[in-house]
Figure 1 (cartoon, rainbow, N blue to C red):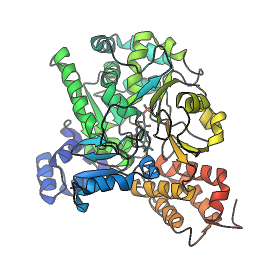
Figure 2 (cartoon, rainbow, N blue to C red):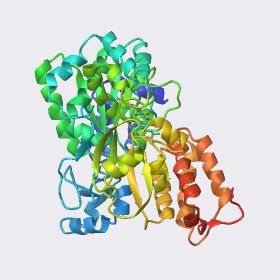
Figure 3 (tube, protein in one colour):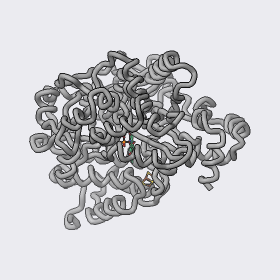
Length: 518
Ligand SMILES: Cc1cc2nc3c(=O)[nH]c(=O)nc-3n(C[C@H](O)[C@H](O)[C@H](O)COP(=O)(O)O)c2cc1C
Ligand code: SF4
């Protein structure tokens, strides 16, 4: 069924059906009927898709950030009080992370995001590298010129660089590019700018403050594929980025003429799972954004059923430096297996919060204590790599380095490398409950282990103070989530849950029934 709908949606190609739905604004029967009629698309299928999203039925005038950092910061009540002076309670909604974690107390009003003090300044960026990959752009023409160079040479440099995807899984970029290029017919390019991990804001930094790096990286990949259209799937929680990217696209069009590459922004509508690559593709198509079974992978059968290269913002943004300095220079940075540099998001509890660029392989202790300056209050653990990343006790900082291997070998995950500090005083059960609640809200519902398991876990944890949880039951739930889930949303949740149970047994003991412990 959805295969037919995919091709039906694809018949119209671009603009995408999701753009239409966003343009229609508030979800209403009339808007659905009108869009369905114009698209020649079943209204029921469109309703099924549109009703999935929080913000397509959201008439709020302001949104308070309820992401992990803002929640732990305790600034939420203060922000709500400020907003209550301007808006009635039913005009104030919530957004799970507006990317102001370096200040905390974020909120959105009128398509702009702010921190608790009402400021909307640039994200602080620091690096110790003399020639950083993500430094300020000096010569925009040279960037786009290099992206349009000989395609075989671009592939050679990207292969030599060892660049691995920065969206979390670390898949070799050149291999994905070549695999997509090998398929026949029209191809698409998609930049995953959904950055849904609460605590992460390095993609927001690139999209707003290094926009041309992202566009030039996409253009180079499109050049290799012979693709004419590239989509930037941008989360709704980053409204400020829209105008900035649009202006950069306009500048590109003016400098390159009418036959340039077609960049299109598709705005998300408040769904975390839309960061998962196949859900994201369904979302652009205007289908219900449930995760697709893989294979086939997007490189073979992606957007509108065509071969599609989908990569993260930071992955694309690294390409211009590689083309300018050569793949070998990129590969020379890092530990050999994780090459190049990595952006880290340091939250507001760091003495020097913001985006930090370091060479892969940099010791985590150097990041936290030397570059980040340590913390402004006692911290017991770090959540690295978002809600599906690991939770590491603070003394593990001495044992790890910023690369995929070090984290994986120690039972954690580098992921997209956001670093959220968990204060000594914040209860770990509350943290774990928050993770389960978040996943229960964001599960796409396609597979039962995740749809039912995340909700069951959230309910058990919420009631654990009154009714301690049978540890065997909980371990079984984690096993089912890990092995039975279709994607890493349900399948990845057991990692932080087990980290917390293993490393904070004293705090968790009161919430679990004795005797059943593994
Ligand atoms: C639940 C879930 C959410 C995800 N969210 C994002 C995201 O916000 N941004 C992103 O680039 N990748 C995200 N990913 C990973 C993507 O599926 C995909 O692996 C990535 O975009 C590929 O780009 P890369 O090869 O450049 O890393 C998510 C995966 C899952 C399972
Ligand atoms: S694990 Fe969760 S998010 Fe992933 S496919 Fe299953 S229900 Fe959907």
